[in-house]
Length: 370
Image 1 (cartoon, rainbow, N blue to C red):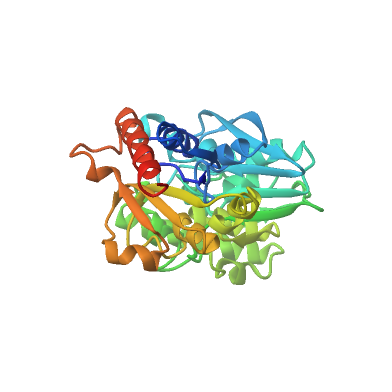
Image 2 (image 1 turned 60 degrees about the vertical axis):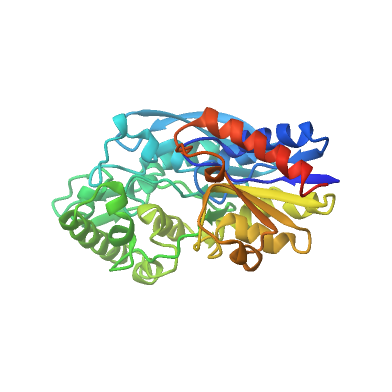
């Protein structure tokens, strides 16, 4: 029996590659061969997943969310460059983890894009999960040569705090992306503005108070009006597109550059050639840190299960709230939860997570693969 190990990361604990390695060790102990295909859904870990699939790793030094140096990486292969927010200017780049809802910037991911363009890719994949800012993508655009100024003509730092002050946007010196397909990998469907927008829905997760959420949303409204005044007549329509609010509005900026928003889970399954791997196996083992009632709504394990059918899929999770009668409708033949093997919290305990994944891999080999 041949098994394909295709998990996402266990956030805060192990990368997707590490999860696959531990499951493979357990399966091997049970005498079962496996292939490993670490996955991502457009969030943090997307670059690592591309590297595991054969892309080349390129280190980049950029501005983190707070402006301090951040040492991230991009992945380049076969004319495609993968750049992610999380490892350039995401929440993990904030000094001491202190949230900066007004002052965090997306500048770093724009700088990473500039470095990726040196490899002359024909496709640029932006993975938007894990963002720290709500700047409408001002930082990203600033790194590509856009400038933002107030009513007095003074140039503004690109951050959420200054979005309310933007009066003019100048793109005359911006980098030209002619011939580059921009793919925005995100499963967020929120628009940029309003009660379902970037500030209202995701601002609190980035440390914004209720008053700061209102301030940021008003700033984003002003930013869109400034774009409309300065040559982007369809800016308001772009702001209303599903996904424009992803990553604090980086989705909006990417759309202005001509990007297309796609399902992160579907896109990375295609990018990493999941269907080709699937044709050679009898069972797929997937998983992520948490599986719950929301998993069926476009989360990677459920998308994978639909793609894999009729090949059976077993899921492994740090925690699962699905009852056995919900497994089948969600696409899973079985679900193994680390929480069923310990009373300890595995989310912040990588070593315990490794031990339990190996144990579960062995159990899958002895039962499901028997």
